[in-house]
Length: 163
Image (cartoon, rainbow, N blue to C red; front, side, top):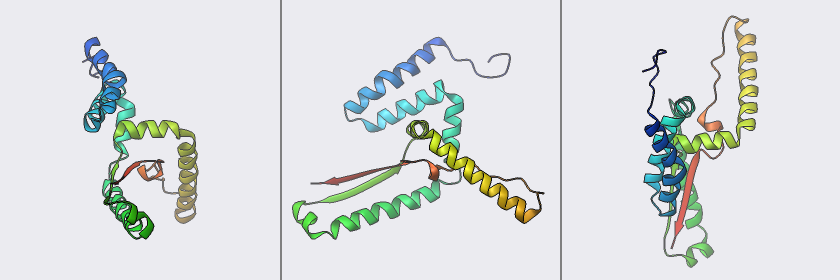
């Protein structure tokens, strides 16, 4: 621990985390080891970028059940649409749809890619909520508006497999 109370990591730990993020995770992806890739990225992200990890992880709080419901509805609806297309279904033997909420590192990368749009949406949303609060409570209330995982583009990974 440092004098400020934060945990100080060794250079070896930092170097290993950096290697995991830049070398081993992409290698795992190329070898088809998606779960290993995700674990390496998320662990390295948590070590190298603590603040960013806590922000990305906080987006899951309270909304993960909503996201799971969205994923179930989305997956079943897409599979239903594909199975109801007679031309498509004649061309394939089997169709399966899988989906998941992206991991914190992947979600953070999406947020960076779309940061201007998300920041703009957050600002506009917060402004509307604050205006509504001021109108309804005569200015005596503070807004609890914050960014939602539902506002992050591509927060859900979807895979359609057909044979």
